[in-house]
Image 1 (tube, rainbow, N blue to C red):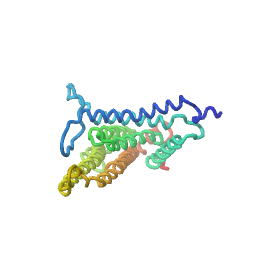
Image 2 (cartoon, helix red, strand yellow; image 1 turned 90 degrees about the vertical axis):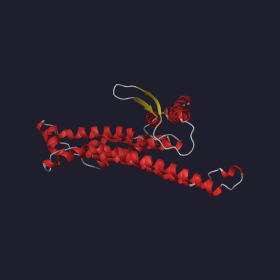
Image 3 (cartoon, rainbow, N blue to C red; image 1 turned 135 degrees about the vertical axis):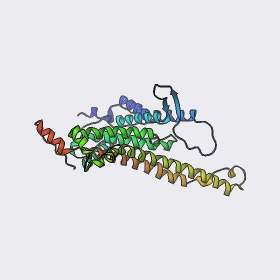
Image 4 (cartoon, helix red, strand yellow; image 1 turned 45 degrees about the vertical axis):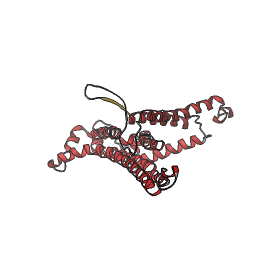
Length: 307
């Protein structure tokens, strides 16, 4: 590769594309901030509620809503897409840009995570797991700029969990539909109702675990901030002028709580959701029944070994 082909000297066109990708990362979030400012009504005190509804119309079964959580989810997805394009812009055989090193590190870590938890057969699942983890983490972290976290809406997390549920069922049926139905009556037929409930409990628990942890953190942070404001006015109300109305006690503690509830908890819940996805999908495959069917069809036996 000649020196003229390296990303460092590609000139104006390379920098313009970089600028467009950076704008593509930032503008969707700015759009959501402007939309929130325009639609948020003036209010006093603490207001804890769900996502705002921007638009609604009648539909045959139920009203169709366009809510804040949906708009913010699309903004996060567009920003993540732009980030991926930015990290992979100007790839070369030998990394000449720090962004390429970051992209390679992310790919290696995701592939290693999938291989160690799901086995070699699921190696191609690395992009899906990375997408789930990134979408969940960034959806929780946008609350740092004052936006509603889509993960604080049970409809969003339920949509992700239902997708994972269909994937789980797809792999369970690999051993045959009849084998799956028979397995519901094991170890004894009386356990069949509980086994059926257990099948549907997986997506429900995944959805409510993620939603509940994110929402509870937002509620606790809002209540603590409101309590500190009231305490500040009660203790420092004797100060002259505007100092009496300044919530001085809110300085410091809410920021510490935000580090835990917004940053640490948001990233941790994204990792947990991705781990549950990998373990549930990998554990759903009936390897013995599937390989028995493959032998009948004269297909090679699959060996799934974790790294």
